[in-house]
Image (cartoon, rainbow, N blue to C red; front, side, top):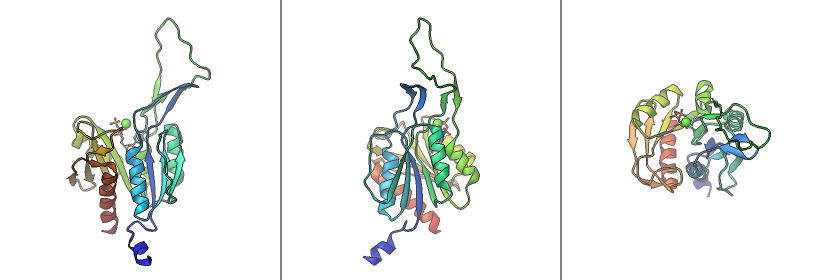
Amino acid sequence: ERDIIQSLPLRSKKILITAGPTFEAIDPVRFIGNHSSGKMGFAIAEAAANLGAQVLLITGPVSLKTDNAAIEVISVQSAQEMYDATHAGFGSCDIAILSAAVADYKPVVVASEKIKKKDSSLTLELEKTKDILASLGAIKKSQFLVGFALETENELENAKTKLKKKNLDLIVLNSLKDKGAGFKSDTNKVTLITKDNKVLPFPVKAKSEVAIDILNHIIEQIHA
Ligand code: CTP
Ligand code: CA
């Protein structure tokens, strides 16, 4: 048993993972959100725990649960709450994998009462949220930082730009064009792009298997 435990490649590593959507409040009963299920992030959390890691999983509103004792779950709603929880955990982690579908915009004001229907149209003013991943790229020390890129056009080029701009060690390109890929699906098709611009395409696989592919690559890199 001792040998098995010692051979776990992520033993003694702390991994921070973000997952799911964020909800940006409009008023007490409404929000701006997206269709992210959190499945990819939860799959990475489970796989990392199975490889011996201690996992901090920061998740937006999802219907998923985990009972893995090696996974600590922090549930958040908004991009700002996810930003705060992520920054609180980042300093003590070895690897951070940001798979959440964070809202890019939020309402400038949150109405304190339910907005009543009027005869006229309604315009909401939105402002940008903070980019959590980019903010970590700007402060990272020895952490291995991984982002996702969700693209529908110019996929490789856009993903490479994100990798550079956000100072990442690895980016996981998630193409929505592919069959068997996307938010609700149990499968995904990804391409890994490394800091030195290596492009590694993978076939459509179960998200649990995609999670292992991503972690295997990280393990190779941190031991190299
Ligand atoms: N991300 C983040 N905080 C945000 C927005 C995005 O941490 N406010 C992270 C996501 O978790 C993902 C990566 O940044 O790991 C890329 O997200 P994506 O939506 O593909 O890219 P953006 O930089 O937001 O650009 P755009 O949506 O315009 O393509
Ligand atoms: Ca975005």
